[in-house]
Image 1 (cartoon, rainbow, N blue to C red):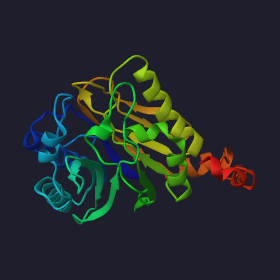
Image 2: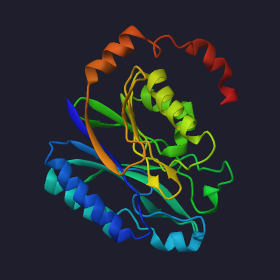
Image 3: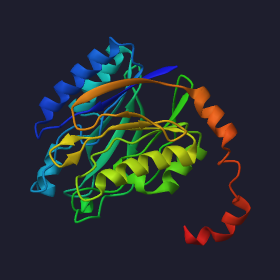
Image 4: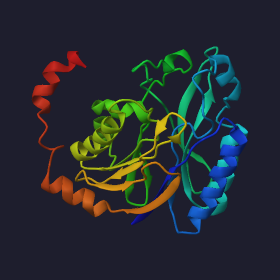
Length: 271
């Protein structure tokens, strides 16, 4: 079975401080036999509401920048896979991509996912600072797991989780910075559990804590059971991903096979 570490941290506005913290956690997790460590959204830095789009763009880096390069070196040195998030430079003036990267055990970029659904809701407008991604990223294989990548607000769009599942994912990763507010914790817990249950897969959702975020990083199993909830503290939790549980769940609750695609295709115009 694959050992996965889920990380809940409070990122500061200082990029180098956050990088040092991440590198320390990678090293510590490897000593525990971890195969994959997953960090929350906004690992690179906390972006206060008062920060301008131009100021955020000045923090951003390309995929070959020093932030990712340091994590690639750490992955290669520890022979551990890392999922991390950055503000990625883009060609649109004063905009950045909200990007998750998968770095493999050799220190190579195995996958890059740019957040599709920007959080323009509940008074926020991520589109004022971010550029949206343009496509899904195929699942990444590690041991006997196939990992699909999402980011935060993407959890509210079940179509995305289902498409990743139909592409082969049996684990969904959702690095997040879930903003505080009325009923937001309820929404978070419901969305994470629903995406796991409806797709018969694990959902690993590391979240930011402190600043404006709720914490409560979660891992939910294919039957919708909460395996990890880190509540409101900085912490790392390690679990083993059991692919047999995924297979057994999908055999006993065959939601993917029971879909009526013969009917759905008649209504594709609604997509």
